[in-house]
Length: 151
Ligand code: UDP
Image (cartoon, rainbow, N blue to C red; front, side):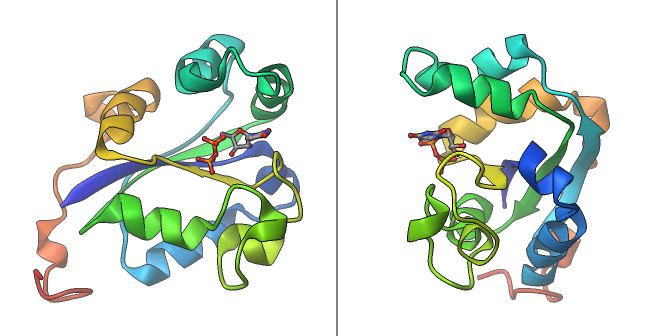
């Protein structure tokens, strides 16, 4: 079992797409273990996007990610990181395949609707930025036999 940090970004919130995005992730079989609506602060943005802070696009990225509320989600499932990244599509919506969230709903490299951790190291770092231990429920191993066979 693996956990991943997902954000439904401010552009998706403004477009009222939160429910549809969450439905896709749940339909796939990923389990909700943490969920809340919140405002990302400039300080949190700098921690979250530490690897990008020095890049030319960072000021606009911070302005975007702090421009309205996000839904923060912790998902659990087998290979949850890779499964979620596949469902998201490529960073640039114009290059994302139809059938992916970014491919179906967006045309932008910046306003790309959703964040998902890109590695186990990233999810280990990102989940505690958004959730305390008390805000996460326990393991969902009971899903075995519902959406997958433990394989
Ligand atoms: N981004 C941007 N301009 C760029 C590259 C990325 O505004 O040239 C934004 C975009 O919202 C992206 C986020 O910065 O989702 C983080 O970039 P990353 O390369 O980590 O993409 P992701 O993992 O989200 O696909």
